[in-house]
Length: 376
Ligand SMILES: *Cc1c(COP(=O)(O)O)cnc(C)c1O
Image (cartoon, rainbow, N blue to C red; front, top):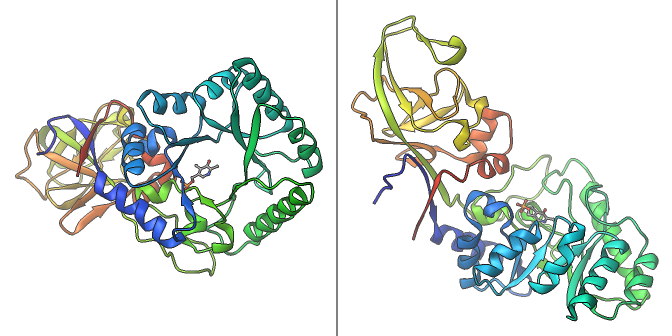
């Protein structure tokens, strides 16, 4: 049953589950697959996706913030939850109380977490991230400096070492190999200092898809793959080993249909001028729903199984398309922004190319007012 909403996304539970299982099949049963569900599961709905992954055996989930972890706990999710994007001073106490596993990015982070655990009178666990070359989060302190602090801990325990790759789909640069080498060096130094956490993890989607098995270790952290995407590779590397496909379809209803004569200007700024007599459909969604403004006069949608061009500027709540080739369309009919109708299909990577951005940005850009509908 199609939704009656003006603009909605349909998310396939079965697709999320089979994408998760495809990742598990590639890495093998010895490696844990931690589902990355940050940012509302890249627009797919964090709680709903977490439930699907847990039902398929995921023991670990990853979010960006303590507040996201809190939402999952309040929804009754009992899996281990890694908080990856850093804690602010007020986050440590709730992280302890919610039983979240923060990633520490400095010895100062570790000390704050120890204090919060002591204040709460509860034991807790954390992972520590080393910056091996991405220069975003992760400590650049030496293993010796980290080990010194780890030896003083009484309330909290370091359970994992991780890092994050900057260029795992790019085989024209040695950056990933250099990051792996640096991570191994850190791991050896930590082991020499008597510290050997049970979890080691480095890989997100790209290092799984373009098989770098020496980077899988004990856990992998896929996000994009769970939603059905793998970024294209650069340079000469292994084939994409992951068989995943998009879990999300994005639809919008036609609000109005009208005919205009040749040489009519369309939309804000009159940036389009139709050459022929044209039938327009005005769609009930715009950039306030997440349709990139950069699709103005250049994107396409699927109308009645055929590609139809966007005409003029995408506006806040409305977008105009040319449906001259599909004159049967009426107000209330669904148009596909992302998805497939017969032979025509558009995915987030293609929309991103038209808009000069990346697929992650397109998926995360689908606004909360767009209704989420879950199907089997
Ligand atoms: C977002 C993120 C991931 C998941 O990345 P994908 O490319 O979506 O698989 C993994 N690890 C960290 C640290 C992240 O920030």
